[in-house]
Structure formats: C-alpha cells, structure tokens
Length: 91
Length: 226
Image 1: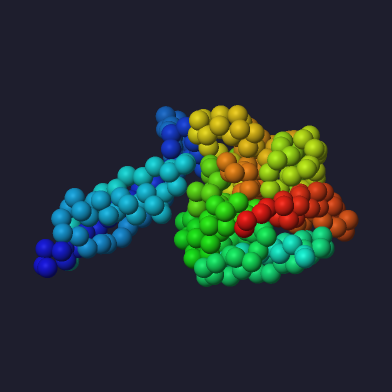
Image 2: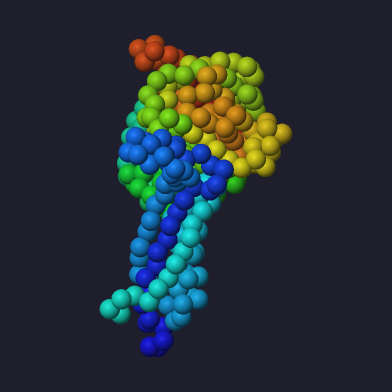
C-alpha cells in the first residue's frame, strides 16, 4: 500500500473564460497608467487554490485534482482552470 | 386545500420569512425546508429564497448545490413540480445545473439595491402562468452577482424556446440580452434575480410581486402527479 500513500501538492488557478467580461481586471488595468505603467494590458483576475492529496502516481494525482477543479472550484460556464501537481514537500 | 409551499433554508439564507409571508398572504400554507432534508414530498411548490447560502464562499451557490436538499429539489423538479429560485436561489439553481447559465459580478462592480422595471416575456412558466406577455412589474433587486451570462448557443436556445421569463426594461447589471429570469426546458423551474416577495405590500413601494407569486400558486395547484 505504500505506493498509494504518496502525498502531492496541487495548485489550481481559476480564471474567467476568455470572452467573459472581467470588470475587476479591466478596473485594475485602467489604474496602472496612473502608476506609470503605460504598456500593461490583458489584466485578468482569478482565484488560486492549494491543497494536498494522496495518490499512487502523478497522473492519478493530476486526475483527482482536475476533478476537484472541474466539479467544485470552477464554474465551467464562466471559468476555466489550470491544474498543476508536484510532490508534497516534507512528505 | 391550501397550496403548500416549501421554502428552502440554507445556512446564510435571509429572505425565507419574506417569502413565507408573501405566499401566505395569497392564501398558501408555507413552511421552511432545512437544507439537510432529503425529501420535498408533500409540497406543491418550492421556493429557494435569497441570501448568502454558505456565506457565498467560493461562488454564490457553489457550496449550497451539494446540500442534501438539492437532491430532493432536483427530484421535485424532474417530476414537474414548480421550483422558483430568487436571487441567491437563482444562483444555487444555476450552480446545480437545474437552470442554464451563470450569474457573475455586476457590470460596474457595484452592489445594486433598487427597484427596477421588468417585462414579462412568456406567460407559460411556473412563475408567469397566465400573465400577459408585455406586462411590466416593478420589483426590487438586491445583488452583487446578478449579471446573467451564458454561451452563445445557450442564449440562442433560450430565445428560440421562449425561455427568457423576464427582461429588465433598463438593464442595471450587464446581464446578457437584459435577462432577469430564465426557466428550464420543462418551464417548471424558474430563476430570477429580482425579489417579488419584497413587492407584495403598498408599504414596500410595490405590490407587483403578487402578479408573479400568484402565478406560482396557480401553477402549483395545476401541477399534477407531484
């Protein structure tokens, strides 16, 4: 069973889908010129999640974390997620 | 026999007593249905009222959709029972997949608390049965995430199938196609951001909510086999 007890750290980033208005991002972008950043555009806001999970291998960990992202963390109607898993530190 | 309305209560719901008061004034019997309930039998209609279920954590409705009661709501809806989600209740129904689309933050990023004019777009849904198309009603809104959105295919289908139930006369929040409320394919599940239960007494500035809630009670009494 030792193979099943490997711990993984998942990082999930949730952003609004392209084409969905992001008023927070747009507001931030409009504020940047006042700070002297003239050439910054494409600002988008989102959420970031971190959690640890147990899985036999990286593919299985990624599949689990992706399901968590798809079923709960992101609303697929308006959001999309990117999922990364790495071996948990100190595991 | 009086029409029996179940009003679903999640932790953080805050419009449940307004909803009960409003439908009781119209002659119905109403009671609270706890979010842990696993059945909704014995009711002729269900209301998911407004508020901040589970603190709106993650997204409005995102946690509430996993409540035990949502299985009962889905069964009730599948059997043809009238279900209306108001404001946060609308958000819960979209998250649960019982209604299409999603509610995102208002255009302009402002919390809106005002009375708006709505136009009834179909008289054949659980919330508008028998109401003339084109009827305008003044109903309060009270939301931050009320900006209805869906993909182009969904929008086309909603239009083709006349499933846009209510439109804002003057769009306050950026909702696509001025949509204030939609229904499911069966037309028995309706979600809307405005609060008809808060417009049922002259003291509250409008009685127009009665037009919609009376229609709900009519469809509740005509829904058979629930």
